[in-house]
Image (cartoon, rainbow, N blue to C red; front, side, top):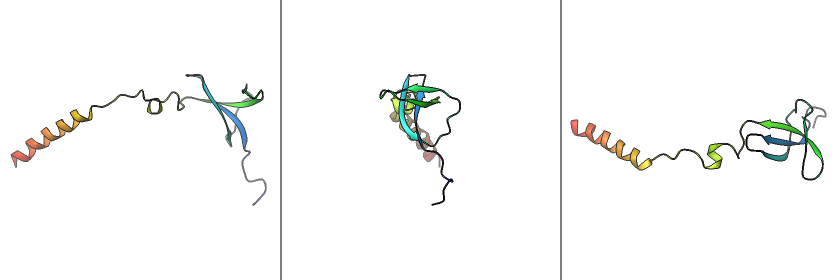
Length: 87
């Protein structure tokens, strides 16, 4: 492999402030600024702030609007039953 072409791979804390959720992982993301946060192991790591994470996104939390599929099927059948009778 060529030397010097790979991005720097470091540990970073991803932080979703809207629900106070954070996780530590390795990333090649370039951290802007000098914000650091202490982790449970006592070390400080650079922080990447997130707008949405698995804790705050409705798809992952199960708080999304549930659609009545039975009602949609009935509407579909009624609509196309009328069209098929007209032909």
